[in-house]
Length: 118
Image (cartoon, rainbow, N blue to C red; front, side, top):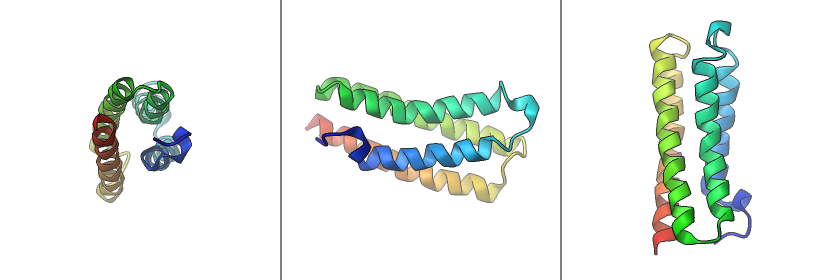
């Protein structure tokens, strides 16, 4: 296990995803500030926060549980992005770019969960 959560590839990739989402969400209409924008930013932040918190638990079972919560937040984030597409706040190309990064994150997260369970 890595000594610091910041050295985990899964955390690094999810951080990139979180930052991309944060930058895009800032362009959403002002009326979405406390609705979709807030939900999207909170869900994406929850991914990296849960990975970090799990890493700090020092027990693989607790760490695995926080990583499963991170996986749920990651999937919630994708749903919010689909909503942003449906509302025409992002293009299909942008959604597909986010989906590609999501898939990269989910693969790393599933791999990390698998590693923790062994």
